[in-house]
Image 1 (cartoon, one colour):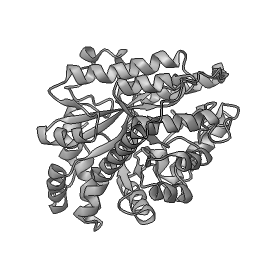
Image 2 (tube, one colour):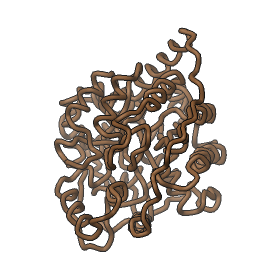
Image 3 (cartoon, helix red, strand yellow):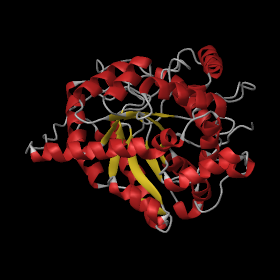
Image 4 (cartoon, one colour):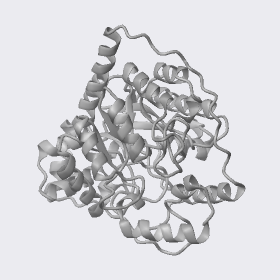
Length: 420
């Protein structure tokens, strides 16, 4: 697989995009590389060797450098119903920290907003640790505080499965949006200065979080529901609410979040072959294997989502969260080297450098600074940290063997991206 910079158009727009990204920090809001590493090598970073291009997937050091990425949010992701979620969360955070240590010549830990400028100045790739899904806190605030101590600065409240304290957009509601503990969780994230991420949360839960939060929130990897009706995409009312909170929505590359025809086809396939599967499993089947060619998503279609969001939310409230996860990607957005080509296309569409600088990273940086300020303000108010308040929440039953087998099949397919 050639690097995107090698196959992209080398016109004037491409040159302008490269010059823009030399000065403007590029911050990508979501990447599942840690999960790819866990599945591919059991987290053995030496065996995997991130210094080499891995054509079977989408993210490694050469392609992050080619993409001119200043900061990559690295997700400590785990499925909602995985066994031992508290342990797995720590393992994923540990993997990211080991990656930072092993490749200290390349990666620079980002623990505060001021680290972003330092990473840019030093020519390093900043790594900002996120946790995708709070299932691992097991109904207690104490793990959240420990995650913060370990360097976590962004938390996605849930994944494809609803939790007792927050409902997912791709599962049955069980928390009435956001439970009492969910409100306590948001308050503690505000106090700690951790960015609250609403991607995956149901619209009801997301609006409740926005109302409860004293700090801006983000949608780190979501697109416009009006253009593609995937349940993971944000309806207009939510996009407006995020913007009004001074937050941002970060457009994502997931093909079924981009192309409505692709999403319709996938829905039809899923319902025909797995009519009784758990909704969280169904939502994970973004790229069902072995059912013939599917209509592709494209760079042009992604740009349409960006333009829609810019118009609806305003240029101060949009960013990019690629969500590379080792699986199929849109044509023109195949791997982490694509960002110069992406910004070149936006330049061709008439977008100016001030707007594109904000889209690239300035908007995320503003949100991070604001979240940190809110945390300091809460501390000055001498508000004591809430007690751990461990809850004895009943965990959702494990996925049925049939659903688990389906999900396993799709994950194996995602590990071997389909040819374009």
